[in-house]
View 1: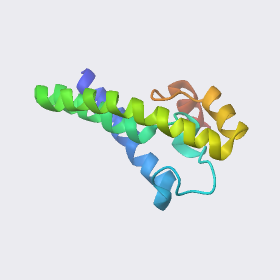
View 2 (view 1 turned 90 degrees about the vertical axis):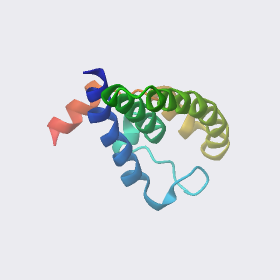
View 3 (view 1 turned 180 degrees about the vertical axis):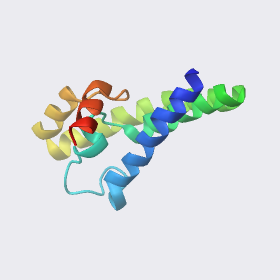
Length: 120
């Protein structure tokens, strides 16, 4: 059940992150800080989406290697996030600091997501 929920929740989070970031892709390619869409609820939806989707697939398919790949990716991207945070703080200053202080690193604010979804 945990594997299924991980895939059902985090695969769409990853796909939404690609949609909202668009062609700007990686850090340094956008003149603006993206804080809308899925980025309103989590700062690193691509990383968390891939990590938890792989972990969930590992559980669903009973493949330890896939699950461990997800956990490894999670750990590696944590260090990448810290590097990116420094760069984003330099580029966007207080705007990024406020965003960082109000938006979780990996786990979305699900209660706010659901409220936003049903509000529309």
